[in-house]
Image (tube, rainbow, N blue to C red):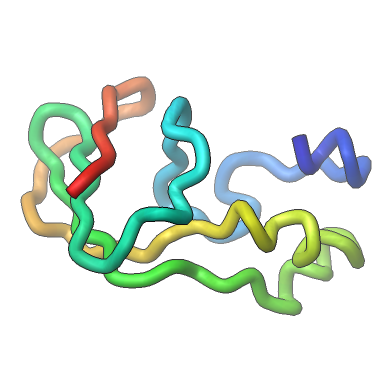
Length: 93
């Protein structure tokens, strides 16, 4: 993990993320228009890939370098609902 590699102690939300997905591997192949389903109700539509910015260096001087290939996504809500920790997520077109 980045925490182990850099000796940091980042927690969920430390980088401004709103939702963290596990078990999908590298999401960098997702393109604008691709959908992400969260739980039984919520559907997001990918709008862009986030870029690692220099503000992350406040956590560690090498943070941008380490996160470059692990950048997040921005999305809009297509279908609202309730999402809870542990809900199943599906990624795809």
